[in-house]
Image (spheres, rainbow, N blue to C red):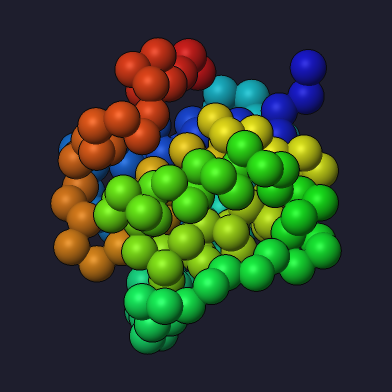
Length: 157
């Protein structure tokens, strides 16, 4: 089975974001590590670009929608995010775990993945990646209870 960009993102998140490593781990170091464990160069570059785009959101925080705002999904979003995925995002937002601005980042990052059909597990992982990239997130911090099942926190590499 060929690895996807998502597989690489999960590996990088597990290896570099959940462990206590220096804050400025160099892109080249990560590239070498990913090549060493067998990920293909083209997918590695796409995954690292995906992460760089996520990091760009950290420095360009835009004001979020007001409390009475309604989120209407585009045709592309509806095709890629099924009812379960959209429902998960809505429940995370209603439960206070995800702010509207963060929801928009999650949706953008989900649509940037190289897969036509997205699962709720993928949504959960991307939510964790987005939340951990936000200002105020601490290195090595664990996800809020309930977002990821315990089995997902020990993904084999």
